[in-house]
Image (cartoon, rainbow, N blue to C red; front, top):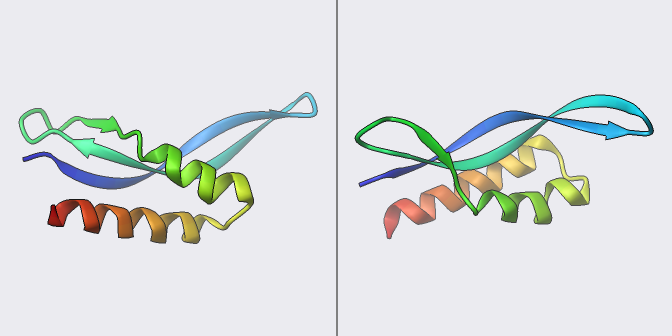
Length: 74
């Protein structure tokens, strides 16, 4: 069974002609066989509901952990 994990990653944005690195939170699926982490479409939920609305990094992380806890119980 594959597991869901929460990971921080950096996003490079261009704002007003200058590049800015920001840290964001994503949900990934870790393959049991290869141990590779594949980005999950659920990351878009975190992006639209939290990051785009200016919520803090800890709020994004708390939501992501709640989602992964729910998915592991299914």
